[in-house]
Image (tube, rainbow, N blue to C red):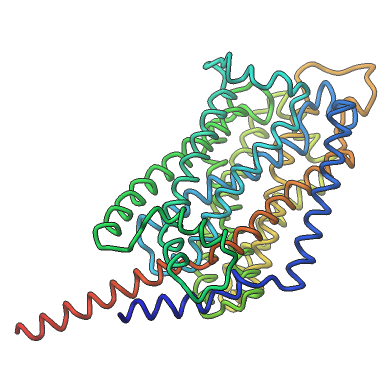
Length: 449
């Protein structure tokens, strides 16, 4: 009875997020739809005229699209890994952040691969990848990894949503359209929160959390192999797989911190997302920044020390045409977060969020420097070629589609948290149930003595 009353209190507390849409939220949604509309217009132009409307040419065959793909996919894999770890170890503060992580994971793995489609000049031949896959190709491995990860993350997300769907289904005071109530009933799949059902769901979710952790490591390793198994200067490195995994976690933790700050601020959730959450996330980000800095230094130092002609040419490109971007990505992007997070007095919520924002921007630039300069520095010298065919400059079409992808991610996130509470109600109930059981067991023990 006590827990039933607690469920009603939680529904009453989170119902405004589900029932009402403020004017600011409506303006936000319209703005995102407008950005997506411009992106659709740009896509139509690219589809009709081909890649000539982009900055991609014979030498630089990849551009912003592949960089955005790497960023979103690494965000998804890191989210899957973090979510699985939080659930597997039953961390006490997971209820406040786990749903944010899970939603970011699934939306990233949906939006990210779309950028790969934008890289393909002949979309009409896309089905050949599935009809005639070449198993020796790391790209085929990546397709299998992405599809497997998408299915696994979606199942894992749905399993964690089921108890909350049941709570919303059984809430008569919730003022929602009838179609939404019917949908909650359908998605709850007759979950009645019995001890047997809870045990089955917990066991299934635990198994899925372990699988998600393994899939995240394998899938992002395969993505790194697409680069490192080639002979291109700057890519042919044995350190790429662990570097990509650490970089993915680095960006994932940073985006989670930013999302926590915005959600906490907008929805007034200071009660659930507290300063200690930011401090713990900051400590994780600090360790990851040290690891990523070490991997980055090791990679560039090995290239410089080896004195291979191709690697030296690449370093000349990085320290020449891309000098300031290199400084922003590999110095500012690491040092500012490192300073803020390592000094206790600076570890405030706002400064931690600022450090996370710098980390995200720095990592995106770092991915840019991995892809573009290498393609601009081929093994064979290029002569009598127009500069625009050698050096890459993104066009408005690419930027429009890039911002449209980000806007689509934010729009789906906004709509999804209007459909399900951003804080796991069932997780809060489970914690209180465990505390109640522990207290009862202690009382019984005292009575027995």
